[in-house]
Image (cartoon, rainbow, N blue to C red; front, top):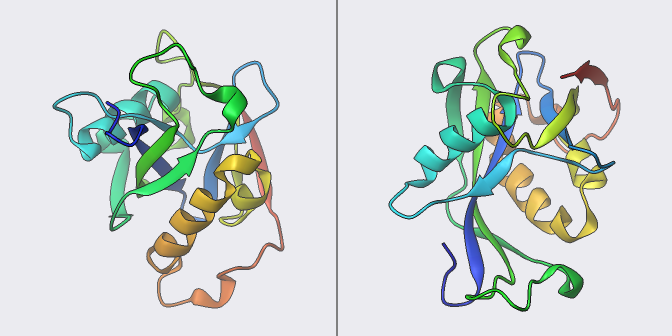
Length: 176
């Protein structure tokens, strides 16, 4: 679904573990890393889209996670001009996203990056909450910052001492 301004309806997912780290996925066949995300289908709620995308991209089911929170409204980013498909109608100029913060409620063995017939990621790792703001492709950085800042109080709780700390950049590598 694309709105009248050309923004595709989408969800973004920040998945945290018990150590306060977040899931960071490497796009299949690329050197680009990102959070799980994907489009909202017609007659699908943002929450329904989030659970579908979560399963398609990580193999996790709704019983494997808890919703901690979501952004209050839509967060938008524009695509660079060279990524806009000029021949498609309606033309998509970017994404408008509702971001969800989830807590992992299962073992890491529940992850299955190949659960879907069209995998999005070929590997993943746990990273510091703020690291994705620095590593994501440049045109998504502002929307990542807005989502991470808005959801940080829910992620860190009363202990906001780690808020905005990029060090240490602990990272645990996991393969699919």
